[in-house]
Each structure stands twice: as C-alpha cells, then as structure tokens.
Image (cartoon, rainbow, N blue to C red; front, top):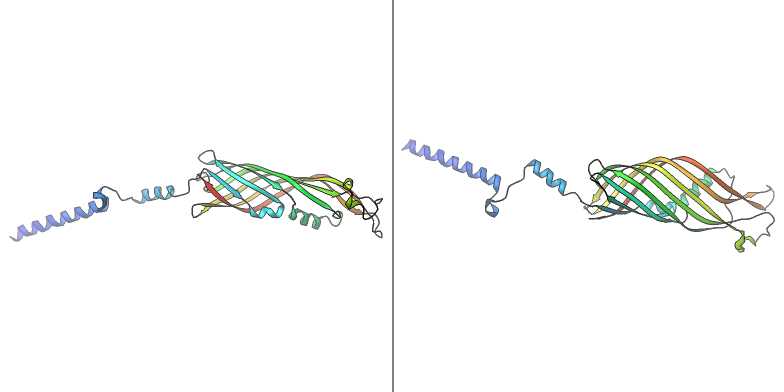
Amino acid sequence: MIKTAFFVFIILLSFIANAQNNQQQYGSDNGGKYVYYNQTTDKKADQKSKPEYRQLIKVCPQWLLEGNIPIFYERKIGKNITVAPSVGVTFHDYLWEIFEQAGNDGAYIPVKARYYKPGLSAALGFKYYPSGALNGFYIAPEVRYRNYQSLGLWNTYTNNPGTPKTDPENYLHESLVFTDLKFTFGYILYIDKVMPMEFFGSIGIREKREFRVYDVNIYSYSTYSTTGLLNRVTSTPLLSFGVKIGIGVK
C-alpha cells in the first residue's frame, strides 16, 4: 500500500511539473496557442519598436542669427544611406556683421545706409548611418551655399551732405556669398518616437565672396568721408555645431 501511494505521488509530481513547463512555453490564454518570447525575440521586438520613417523634415532655429531660414528634407535611399537637401531664404547675417566689424581693426566703417534684400540659401549632403538610415550616429559630406543681397550707400566726398540717402542712384547693389565644403558628424534621436532631434558638428573650409561698400575717412580732421568698394575672395577653416528639430514622415 505504501509503495503504491509512493508511485502515485511520483506520477502526480511529474504531471504537475510537465503542466507548469507547458504553461511557461504556451501560456494559458487563447487556448494555449501563443508562445512567450525569449531574450533573442525580445531584442527583435525592441528593434521593430524604433521609428521606421522614410523621410524627415527639419528646421534649425539657431540659423536665424545668421539671417538664414532653410527647410531641411532628408529621405532614405538605402538601408544605411539618405540624401539631405535644403533650400531657404537669406536676409541679414547678424553674426557675420558683428564678427566682421570686430575683426577689421577699424579699416572699414559701416556705410551710413544699407538695405537688405531677400537672397537664396541651399545645401546638399549624403548621410551614412552605420546602424540603419535615420537612426543614431551618422557621417555626411555636405556642400552649403548662402547668398546675401543688399543695397549700400555709394558716397563720395563731393556729395552734398544730406542728399545721398534720398537719391536711389547713390546706392550700389551688394552681395555676400558663402560656400562651405564640409564633413558633418551627427546623431538623431526621437522624442516620443515622433519628433526627431538632431545634434551635429561640422568641419571643413569656407569660401567667402564680398562685393560691398564701406565708408573710409579722407582726413582725420574732416567729417567728410568717401566710399571704398570691397571686392575680394577669401577662404577660411570652418567649425560649427547645432541642433535641428522636426517631424518624421512614413
């Protein structure tokens, strides 16, 4: 009798253990027809939870300080590659004016009147994402173009003070053009899997073309001044940082 009870007890333990094992594998809901994911499957599910956008539309608020309002468009063209053009409008490069005046040692004095006109900005880059397009770290070769237009007062010492500002013929059409060739390094993350936020930094070279007028004093004791025409092309190293924000499009 004791042996029989012992064998029955062993059989019951085996049945209970087997039932618990089946429950862990299949679950008790839906008639035991679904399977629990293991660690490998969970990783795949986590990867699928990342935003799967094919296009991004972004802006860069800080570039308002340089008088530039571009719209950035980025589109996936391969598993790890995107194309990123932009187009915008320029008006007045405030930052350049500040640093230019600080660095010219008083050689050129701002003209007494200058009117800014709309210009064009554009850029094109190709981005490579090691972990998949539009997610995480990227590196990108880029070219960027900005054209600022203005009218500067063209003054000479023979002008009668007070009349040049009212005569349209005394204004010269000016241009200030920047062309940048650079490599950009950046990282894209998503806020609530909806809003892309892009942090970037660039190194490269910048070509600057200036065609502008500046007032130059004729005599140190005179209030009269004449206008010099600055027409030059220079190249300088480029280093920049910034943040872009936008929206994702499927």
